[in-house]
Every structure is written in structure tokens, then in C-alpha cells.
Length: 240
Picture 1 (cartoon, rainbow, N blue to C red):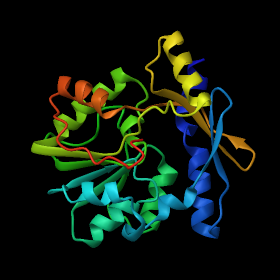
Picture 2: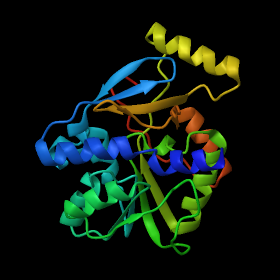
Picture 3: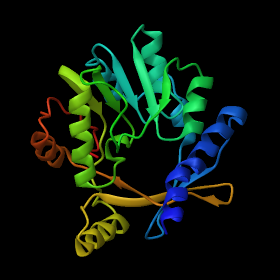
């Protein structure tokens, strides 16, 4: 059992890394996400290679608040790090997958390292001024307890005026299939926005992992317990 867990941890994002590399090399990759109730959604892999022109308006607004030295967490193909580098910022990119870090370096990210934000990070106290967690990376630790631990670690490695720029997604109740899933979470004693998913690509299935979706009000309450203040919210028109 212990050996199996080690393998799962090592390979958790290998399928995702395969898709990123294939898209980088060929311009095509058919990647899907599967939820543990069978719901599937195609992942727009090209999104991980966008330049500033195609960033979401909320990302562009948030990036105006970047200060000092930045840490790009869950950097993927490095789109945000490359943008900040181009503007002359000092930025360190991290990802849990060595193959994804290799891709970020291949695409020009100068300082890309393997690190797991759900564990103690290999940086000194106050090393960064800005932490970036765009996409679904704010919830990548998977549970409220692990999310709080991540906030404590980000508090340690950021300066006195440190800030987190992040996107989050409210658990959707608009569609019956999502509403049913939220009810299941409540029945199982899980956080309402805790989603268990895995990647599907070229006939391969990635390991299951939890993603935590938080509404801004929930985020405000949890963050305050770890000495973070929710300073500004940039809502989508859909309020998602």
C-alpha cells in the first residue's frame, strides 16, 4: 500500500504533462478531465500556452497588483512567468511535476524548479513579495485543512506586504449534475466544493486528486484564520 501511494504521488500529473508536451510539439492534444461521478469535460489545453493578449480580463486586472519578486505556483507551461519575465520582473516558477518544469524551462522560463506547495517550500522566510495561483491552482491542495496549511506556508515565504494573486471558482449549482455532486459531498462529510478528478489522455488515466473550489465568502473566512485579508475581488459577469 505504501509503495502504491508513492507511485501515485509521483505520477499524479504525468498524464497532464504528456498532454502539455504533445501540444507544445504538435499543436494538438485531446485532454479530458473526469470527475469521480463519471462527469467528463474536455480541457482546453491551448489555454496553458496563451500570451498576455489572451489572458482573462480578471487575470490582467490582478497582475496589476504584482509587486517585487514573484512566485508562480503550479506554473504549467509557464505562461505567467514568461509574461512577467518579459516585463523585467524577478520570478521563480514551481510545479510538482519534473516534466512540466522541464517544459517551462524549454519555453524560456529562467528559474523553474520542482516543488510541492502542499509541503514546506524550499525558500527562506520573506523571499517573495507576490505569489500567483491562477487557473485552479488555489485549490490544488484539495481540502480545507491542506489549503490552510498552504496559506501558512505562503505567509512564511512572503514579505510583510506580501500578496497572493489567485483565481477561484464557486461550486456551481446551475446545472443538475453539479448540484447533485455538491449534495453528495455534503452527505459524505466532504467540503461542498471538494472535487475529485483525474486526467484522461491518449488512452491513459491519471491518478485521482482533489481540487477545492471556494466561493469568495468562504475564502475570506478561511484566509482570515491564517493572517490573510481578502483585499479585492474581480468577478466574472457570470459570477462563477
